[in-house]
Amino acid sequence: MSFEVIVIGSGIGGLTAAALLGRYHKRVLVCESHAIAGGAAHSFTRRGFTFDSGPSFYCGLGNQRPSLNPLRQVLDVLGESLQVVSYDPLGHYHFPEGSFPVYCDAQRYREAVAEITPQGAKELAQFEQRLLSLYDCLKDIPTIALRADWRLIPILLSNYLPTIVKMLPQLGIIQGSVGKVMDQYVRDPWVRRLIDLECFLLSGLKAHGTVAPEVAFMLGERSRAGVEYPVGGSGAIVAALVRGLQHWGGELRLNTHVEQILVAEGKVLGVRLRNGEVIEAPVVISNATLWDTYTKLLQEEDLPPSYRQSSLATPAVDSFMHLHLGIQAEGLEQLTGHHVVVQDANKDITEPGNTCMISIPSVWDRNLAPEGHHVVHVYSLEPYADWCRDELYQEKKKMRSQPLLCALERIIPDIRERIVLELIGTPLTHAHYLRRYQGTYGPAIAAGKGLFPGYQTPIKGLYRVGDSTMPGIGVPAVAASGILCANTLVD
Image 1: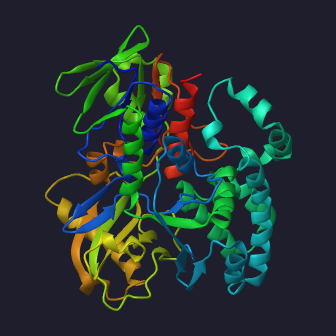
Image 2: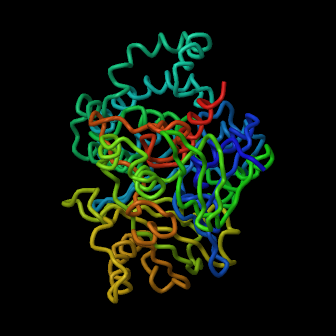
Image 3: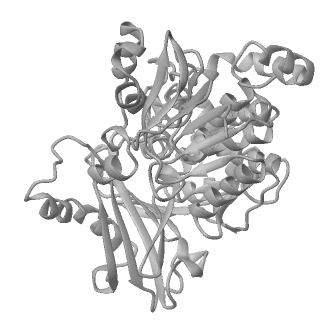
């Protein structure tokens, strides 16, 4: 069988692009090196415990319509559905000086903040109101309608002209940072730290490095649509995309490692697999990171030297330490599912091990763990440098996982006595299993310091999707990258 499009990698961005192109009647093949589809969003099972490898926080995947989540829009187009569990509060933030709940409802959220700092709550309200005025414009244009070429202009003018007019006063903030808005409205140091934390959770950067539309969309959606967890975990999302891909005639091949993208005279010819097989196609979409695409999948001479050099100089977000635990659940009936722990107020929130994210999804989906148990996922930033698989590797893994356990003790004080299964992931784990450059989650391009590279490349027929193409760490951003790429490749 001949293919019109080959997609390298079955992460959310790659599956989104592939499934949409299948829906648009293109003959599509997805080549996945791993034995499991999903990339950084795959699920895996050990001894009856089902773990999310990466994302665990979702918004707008349920039945509320219209949904502004790009992934939900794609699933609607594909005819696929998800069963979700809604919950509120969406989580708890634990600072050294105390903890407080984070509600989806904006008024309840501000009331919780007001118990800590009444003046700060008023400043937070002004800050959010400014960003929500931007959200009110962005929400009127669904991502599924967008593309990344000049043909977007007539689509916007013919279908969304009133929204474009409404957006004109917002142009100054669209490319600006959240930090600029924060500086304008917020003086309270506690609330400023809170905003920095929420930006960090969203983009991997603090407020002055995060673009305003990211946070505007997050604030608007969590208050409008609420938050949910997909039954079956992130693997259920991947399974829905794979079903959609196959329903519309696309093909997924697991354990199929692409060794090289074949290029001649500046034009894509197809790919060569590790086993030597050559598969031809006029279009190749790489869901690998830009660093892996340009150093491992392409020959150095395939790219213009200056373009290659500037691309590879793009700064990368650090990798993560991950702790996946199976624990005894007795006595934890009041446990909630999401927590963020900041351990030391005198250290920067971006310092490795200081800010720890905790997800306990078996609170919502009991089938993720054996009866009487919970699954726990804890993670924190961790640089790739200085990690190597030497005789000290196992000892270092254990040592660097201790801050994650200490953070978890804020939520479950006797956690160490409850553990029945412990899996520790390092940046090397990410780099190996996900085939990601230094285990990173994408570029660390601060607001105003440059644009993300986008889906296009200098090679005719070669495109990219995933977290190297759009700002934001998370599923909506990578799903949007797949949408833009797929839509641009069709009339």
